[in-house]
Length: 348
Image (cartoon, rainbow, N blue to C red; front, side, top):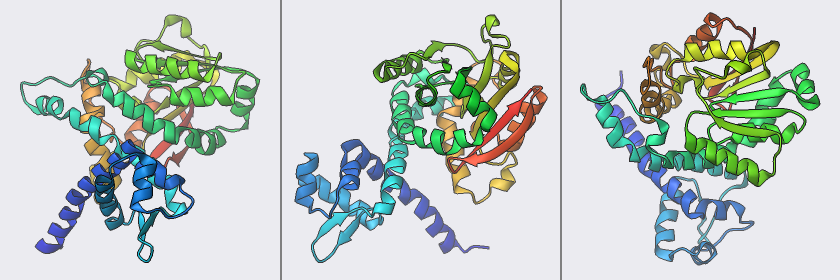
């Protein structure tokens, strides 16, 4: 059993890290992280300030936080700063994730109201549109690598050959279209449709597709519980990335997925890879992070509409797999991707 002092030090580390995370987010927002990660040699405070067009004194304070946290290195002899080459990608990606702190904090009053006995069940993503700006920014940093290095290699040769020849693909809960567009760029002969409940997500996805000059992808507002009747047995590949737990009734959504799949279709489902049994998540800081994030985004979203299932981000990989099977599908393969998520490959 840990002592009072040990527990206090442990808790203090968690709380203190929140403030460091704010500094990381600020570094990403101001361009400091990207500037340092792009530098080929150590830089003085003056060079960093001039290169980013930021005030020297504030840059100095930010560097103090980063050096103390060992995220940026200080060469004591020259008093110059640098990021180690093997740390740069992590700092860029984690920095992009840290930027979510701002949009999350803007939701705190909404979340507090949901906690109250007489408060609302939840609220939709569109209640705080700035969240989509962060969501789009973060996914744009991570999406291409996840698609090219983790999702596509796990699809199997048969589906990859079909994608190269040309098939119909639907991304349900496409958000701002990052994954749909990444796949559409790789497989120009295939046709992709992104379905998103929030109009702000659809607009951002359409703008991105237009910027990319893509002709094989479209986006539309839609409800995963009630997809068009004309879509019955239409799609060769159905894709849902980190969205099913946000839906009011995931079970109904899975039945809709089965309906729109052809007899030989593939359904790829990505969910959070924590356990359904809370006792198996004890000591898992990643699980703690997802539970915390879920309170601000996933849980209110899933509770905002009937039947208010409210599974949240951490309903767990075991419960998720059970729901897929109960929905009439077979799990033919599964693997961990993106470090913390699980990818299920399913068939009828």
